[in-house]
Image 1 (spheres, rainbow, N blue to C red):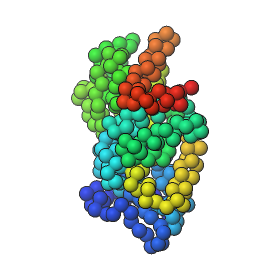
Image 2 (image 1 turned 30 degrees about the horizontal axis):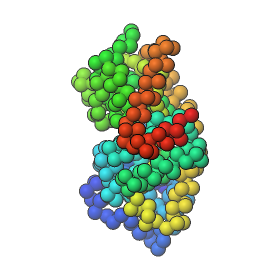
Image 3 (image 1 turned 90 degrees about the vertical axis):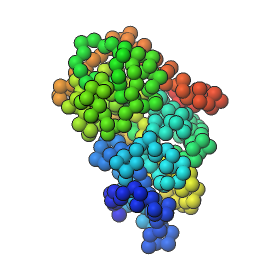
Image 4 (image 1 turned 180 degrees about the vertical axis):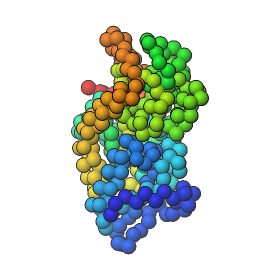
Length: 323
């Protein structure tokens, strides 16, 4: 069975029970929501995960996607998971940092997921998610993709002071340190904000700009990149605890298989950077000294909210999530 993309009106979909029992007595269909639009680079890994579950999980587990950001705003997904409104989600910890600020560690890390699973980092952060928000972090869908700052006007040199840049919690402190005015703007509103001049640019990964048509309003990209994109599969703890051992083990196996394929994002990011150049998006490169200071500030400022939110576990997370 392939992934069903029947995007039901959310109000109707949520009248369904948390588990829709299929014809097979032991098979459970889980309702999923996505923070990312279908047919975009950050939806595709989840599509692969859901397809894999549905193809291999006959009689065990199936996944039905009931909507995307059109049905539920991305910043509301964390609460939906916590309250058991949906069973699982394709989202990022950045979008539920209000519930689990420690989750920002996944964007700050420069370690592969395989190492985090062996050094205790995964277990610790999953434990924090469960305790703070009743959310189970199943695994990571993307890595090896840096963020960049993109600007809507041509610039001969870089002066961040006073720029209004679309932001999310993970780089709020960093941007303020650069003199940027961070603007929290939903992805679906960015194009219009650029068009109207409400923002001077946006922070976004090396890949995905063309999915949203933002290249039409983008003149330049600042190098180097910073941080590392994290998207993942998150479960409502209520749902996860109701699954059988066999169902949980099956889902974990499918997740590990997807994580093993994450190296392909290096090529995807490189291809999109090359396409940006072809489309006329200029590269604004910081000098070697400026780039070093830029990266160092991003790291130090990025960890501050994690350490402040959890003085006990924060230092442990930094140790486990850093080289």
